[in-house]
Amino acid sequence: LIRLEGVAGCDPVGGGNLTNKRPSCAPSPQDLSSWWKQLEDRGASSRRVDMAALFQEASSCPVCSDYLEKPMSLECGCSVCLKCINSLQKEPNGEGLLCYCCSVVSQKNKVRPNRQLERLVSHIKELEPKLKKILQMNPRMRKFQVDMTLDANTANNFLLISDDLRSVRSGRIRQNWQDLAERFDFSVCVLGSSRFTCGRHYWEVGVGTSTEWDLGVCRESVHRKGRIQLTTERGFWTVSLRTGSHLSASTVPPTFLFIDGKLQRVGIFLDMGMQNVSFFDAEGGSHVYTFRRVSAEEPLRPFLAPSIPPNGDQGVLSICPVMNPGTTDAPVHPGEAKQTPTAKKQKTG
Image 1 (cartoon, helix red, strand yellow):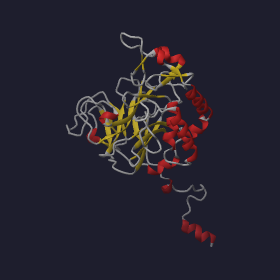
Image 2 (tube, helix red, strand yellow; image 1 turned 180 degrees about the horizontal axis):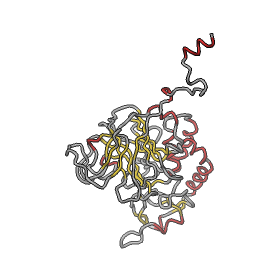
Image 3 (cartoon, helix red, strand yellow; image 1 turned 90 degrees about the horizontal axis):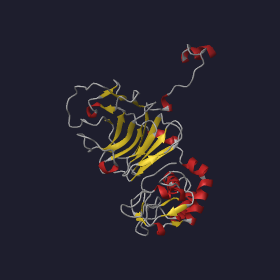
Image 4 (tube, one colour; image 1 turned 30 degrees about the vertical axis):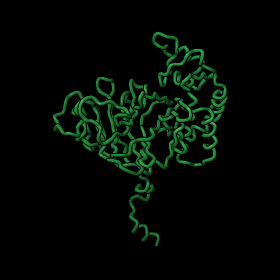
């Protein structure tokens, strides 16, 4: 299942806010029905990926992360599976249930079955192949690929950066680099050299078999000194892997992500105009996560943080080279390879 930040009352079509009509942590079934009709009608709209992800988000249980089964609506408007009700934390010194998403208390006698949402979830499950197709990575994103290197002046002293400035890993020995204002002095991370202020940009980072990493973008002005908290509130829009299998987005609270298989190459697509940044499995083409309403008030920088030893792996992160088919030579038959164009012309004349 794919999770998307900003589901709470957010209209993915017009950009309006629905929370003034309904104080809820999730869209109402009426909202979803309306959005589904627009999803089918809008053709190749630039919002279709966001809308499809919203459907998968709204149809999943926040407790078990599976499709909602016999959904029960809490007083805050969130819904959980009937089987997950008993997993909710109890109110301190009371019998109320704390919502897993927003911690609003619901009294047990106010929790009700949501038949309309149950029917909608059933419909979404039937149309899952269509949703997955919409959420596939668009190959045309690669035409916005950035020829990017790492900014060594921002690298923490425990990082080892390759001579071509495209790969980074953590070392065990502190480097004696100059103490610069832009250098991260405590958190083991580094920024890309690019500064994005407008337009669309795409890059890929190879993570290989690394079991821990953080990738994404951050504001130019983020704090570089002391411990860094990777949250959207502090200007970081990142996806993180921990212990080889726990994937999460830097929302507050964190959004836990579930994908098929393991990521070995991550595609990152930043659209400054739309103010969103999307993450993809660059090998399989599937959508991983999208942050919306990303700040465009100042330049954004690519952000990378490899694993810290000892983690049992090299923890190498590598910026993938730009794939530009326009500069690739056409194949030549081995028997013709030694002949120059002039020689061939004389031979055929």
